[in-house]
Amino acid sequence: MSGSFWQRLDGAARGAAPALMTLMLVLVGVMPLRLPFYGVVAPVLPLIAIYYWAVHRPDLMPFGVVFVLGLLHDILTAAPLGLNAAVFLVAHWIVVGQRRFLVGRSFLVLWWGFIMIAGVAAILEWGIFSIYATAVMPGEPVLFRTLITMAMFPAVAWLAIQVHRGFLATG
Image 1: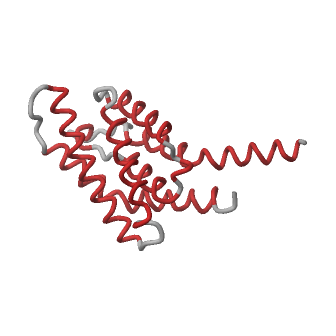
Image 2: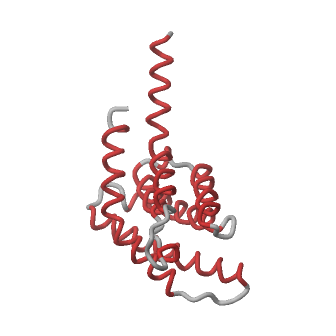
Image 3: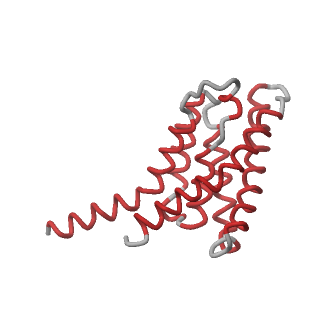
């Protein structure tokens, strides 16, 4: 009986690895750096993890987890409540719907797919924020944040690959 308990606990911990990794990226992404205007153009690191897990293990990154991580990101960044939750959910939904075109492809194809998702997410974020502010918001901060996020994809994807191989390949 104890063997099955420990096996179930191990399986639960391994299954939680994608959500915990994304949570870590939410926290790392909101760490204050002493750089001018960094908060405005800080990369949206959780979007990269959500994309990766939606392609490779959507069963371990369900919509509910994506929603909660988006709300937490909103709270920690002082964004309008639900903004990132909505953006993350739409991005996740699109990727899960298109994953058959992404699974098993080269890294460059995955990166290109992320670039397109990040662009959609940026437009959606800008639109929702403009509606929230009841004014057309400047697009430059969103553009720079999106470009930085796109450039961070290889590093965060490498981390996700390590988590995938280390915790999930043997589980």
